[in-house]
Length: 200
Image 1: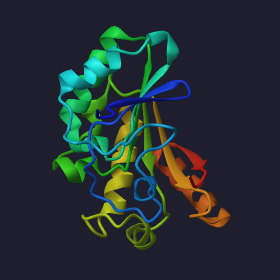
Image 2: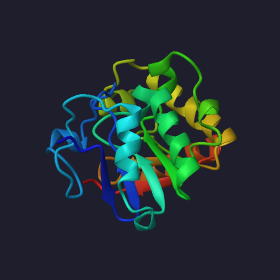
Image 3: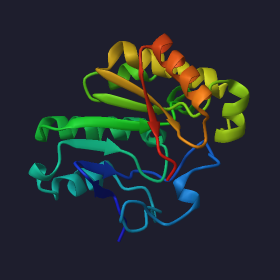
């Protein structure tokens, strides 16, 4: 049975795809089948929007305060389906909706995408991971190459202009304290806040 949704603390996480344009050197999915006690997050196939909504609806809404798009893939690989699920949740649950993303949605979808999320996504958590394009390319290994870093920052800035909250994340141990200080400056420049997350 596929794991479409799984609980993590106060959040219900949604695993819609295993597709991702990146191959981050520190990615959790290179180390195991699942995370946070979930079963395997490797999907036999991508679930339909109806299947995702059915999986969400099967959980007691009082158990969670937020829905998080985060699985073993980049959620914006299925942007329109993601937005359809978010719309369903907005209509049926009083939850905050968070998107955990690598920020390369515009390159994946071939258009500017942040504006499409307005009114549906409350928090965009964007993986910054590095403070310059060269280090980003080395750590994240995106298939779009060197332009990926600037595309990610542009997405974050556009998201910050239309969503309630944008957070940029770096991984402790992968980035130095000096790099984290530089990351905080980048966050200020795009209108986001910084989160230093532990290496898992």
